[in-house]
Length: 484
Image (cartoon, rainbow, N blue to C red; front, top):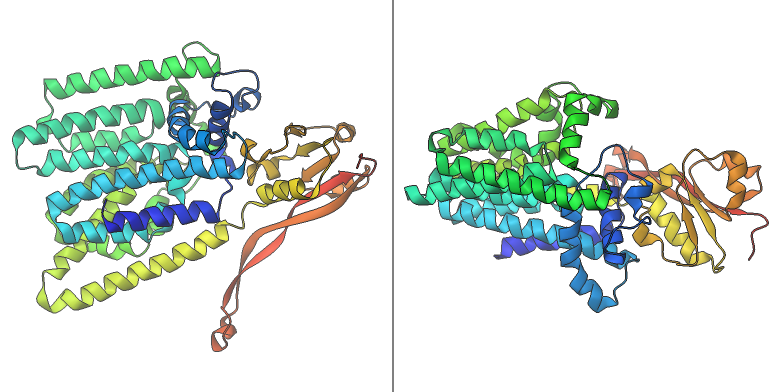
């Protein structure tokens, strides 16, 4: 890895250390890694058996992260609880993405030159979503690791000087894409289809056989691993996700957005300062246009689905950054534009970095549940504690890694009747009024992000004109007659 790859690694590491807690989207993978590290073999105590979620997810990714986390965790004392172990697992994923990105950047250098590879690295290291989210336990982030490798071989299949090298690149790409689609994220099939379609003239019997063998082997791997961990026969999680979201069309239950939303809202947020140069690269460089075309078609396909999230198009970010780097390199070839281009590229990268720092700080305020549980552990010395964690607290930072006391009982059961809360000594709740008249009193409160306050008049002073607005979100309550 070169210095620019190390810069990305540092940015990813700092993001994980500064914002150690996780949100509900990461819950399955985070809890699965905890349970694998603690027990290994599946048992009734696994979180996914108690709280299975709407659709199942594969254990193949969590098994890989757990295996890579285990040696360091073993040396540290084999702790399955604790924020340090959670951070370690997240760093393993983040560093895997950095490593895969370094391989892709190395291929960029081979094909397009060192200047293009350098600007590709600079744009990525300054983007919020490419630094903050690369250590987040999402299926999309797990899938980004093989997708970066597939993109590396995609470049090779398109631009390698040797025909045999291009053919091998296509075979490797097909193998990796098959595994990614079948095991990690079914929606990456959209990108896989357009990437393969762009090399249609090169697809032969060897490629088809490689693809078929990879799909079969990946399916069997998922069936073997996930049938065991989910305790269900013929469990193929990604097929069930496909059936639920696409065939049944139920993804829209999580919100809908207009067809243009990916192009007008998410892509600008993802690329930030790289966006103007990406446009220049696509218009001025034939190879950039060729790369972008496949991903533009993919995003257009995603746009047909009413439910939209930025993470669905995360694999497009490296290609967007590559197009931006090619745009800078193209303008840099014009002597009169060389200095303005470099100054503008550095200014846009710096503005992206400033936004990334600000967004990371704001994101750190979105985990009141995690902070509340940590505060409860630091202030409550009794071993006889039965704490109920309500849905909002559980969604904003509470994981099994944070359940530090083996003598305590932690409960996340939803829909309890008011009388049932009497079985608990403590509550983490977002609705203290519900319990204040039933024998519980507030002992502490954790605030969280509630928006931005913009005050332009402060531009004339030494203060920042923008500040985060906080409001109480999670209350710690104690039963009045709980033993001390």
